[in-house]
Amino acid sequence: MKKRFLTILSVFTLLILSACNNGEIKDARNWPVPDFTYTDQNNESFGLSDLDGKVWVADFIWTNCPDICMPMTFNMAKLQKMAKEEKIDNIEFVSFSIEPDVDTPEVLKEYSKANNADLTNWHFLTGYSQKEIEEFAVEHFKTLVQKAEGSDYVVHQSYFFLVNQEGKIQKIYSGFEDVPYEEIIDDIKTLQ
View (tube, rainbow, N blue to C red):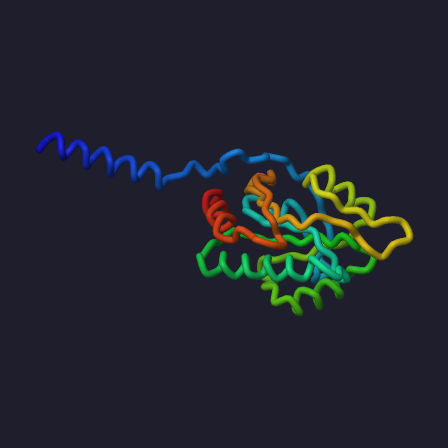
């Protein structure tokens, strides 16, 4: 009887411990995002200090994108809705425009409305030069953003980036096809 009790107790303890997490993502990249202050869709300053202490998901899009940006924005809106349904607080979503000369705050606001973005915790950013956003993306998010001289097309990758409360990129996911929604939600919960 005592042996059975100890076995049950051991199994129960293991279950409790496995349910707990230490708030860390396994194999996290831990790439720090440098301080920034840009302009959001409301023509207001928004930057890293506004994200301090919050988990956030970021992507890089442009409103005239003829192919992957609309699906990416749809997928981000779905992720935002899922986080809300899961009652996840302290979460923000950030979309960096990669065509800042075209994507003014007014254009970004219209784009966000057309894509059902909940702007209570989703910020569409602009207010930098083309060169600045290209360097910012490559140097800190390790993702390609490039507008060829004389071209209207901006080449970029279609990732979602999970960033922790300290402003360090933890994980990268597909933001276009086969988006791992449940995995992203679980990882957000781990960081909370």
